[in-house]
Length: 152
Image (cartoon, rainbow, N blue to C red; front, side, top):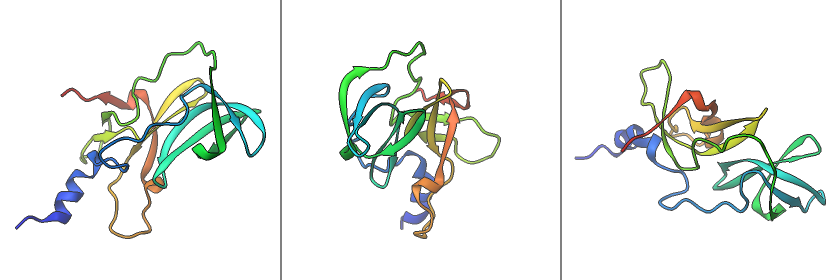
């Protein structure tokens, strides 16, 4: 007999929360966007998976606004930035470099530009069986140096 609970616990780190197909993002990183709720323009500096949808981080007037795709409109115009593209993309499998003995394989669940450096959201702990433990509670924001690319 297969122990489904232990199997799920052992494989949580490679089970994407969005299912089999990764949903497309509404706007690209560093794309200029119009924010309907505030009637202002900003640019997308990040995106992460939360509450079964993409949540966008928009820089506007030196503040970061977190919003859904229903509140922004992409302009197609890219913010000129003299920095490298992110090393990883949404859904990439990576190895989390850490000292603990847990499984180190993870999925990129979000990307954010902070202080001119790219950071990545990964799950740092397995989901609990209780409803109290949400995906947002399990996400960690890590630097590129904390991750290694998975080779298949």
